[in-house]
View (cartoon, rainbow, N blue to C red):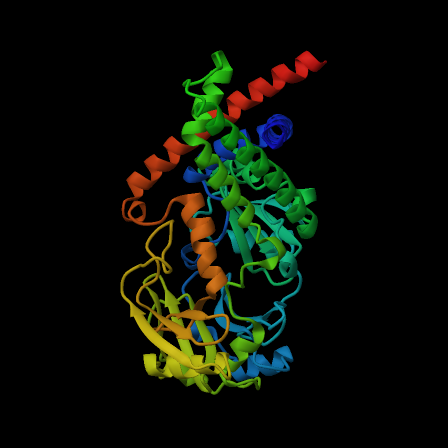
Length: 478
């Protein structure tokens, strides 16, 4: 009696598993096909962004002889109640300017020659600024935009609206300049705009009306990918059960392809969907990747809106920088010159690794610094999938309950990142599973790329054959 009840229960469970896989696959199959196909596109073309190298290349050499305002005077003119999150001296077209970013992200731009704020950016002025870009050939004003496909995320909120300007170069480059400050926020090329519709926009479901509502977008992606994950898990379980019956496959045609490919690569689909789902950081499981405002203030060790460098000090900057950044680290003033060859302290200020470590200790009061490691080569937690990471860096590990690590640039004191135990777990649960950047594949970009393409092709066979079977099922029902 008990055996018959058990057999009946197992039979019902298999039936529900089969029905669940079928209808979950019908509901989400096209999304899975799109994710595998768009992921392959993203290997070649990333989402548009303004890299540090592109920002430096777009900036003209700093004309220090035109500077009449000291950093202290710029702070006084700006009305900053505290020392800002960033204070930079760089060119605004042909005129040097102080670019000020407050702790809450608000931006200001003041003329370093007159101390006056700049008026809102007009079409004529935007075209004149864009004409100084090294790629400019025939500048065209493309009007203003508050939010579009490439500036949809919240990181651009405090820079909106933008004036979009075409450079007329062969690559079809377009610049996004903040109307309020003329800050260059983004550049895109024709190829990026075209291929990203088939790449990142599809892969991340990055439709502007949806992505503009971050909470809603996260919920939509979590639900779709979660249902797809349930469909993948049920399909993999069914495929293995069928295989254990002794025959290679009881199916024919497309169904046989779906079954055999699912057994061979079902785990790939499951890990891909699981890691993609985790990338959305459900319920905030994974910690922040950067220091908060309180940590930055403690690291600076100086809250008052003051900076001691005078014009004579600025004149000691090396030849050819595109920007001077003014900061406090551990209560000490620091001026960093940035140019095509990188960044380094200047103007009579200096920085040592010991000073960086001492200042960093204030970021986590009550926690002891457990270790300091100098990294001269990438490792499992300091890496860059798109190229060589900045080296050397200092890794500071603290004994706080979260097990926090900070990575800092010993040359400039810049805080490069923050991670805790949850973030280090996410490195394996998302990065390693989703992008295969774990050793030994991480040591060979060609091998990693080959593996991703091969596994994605297998995933496409599984998901596309499932879509065909689902379509046939719907036609029969109709």
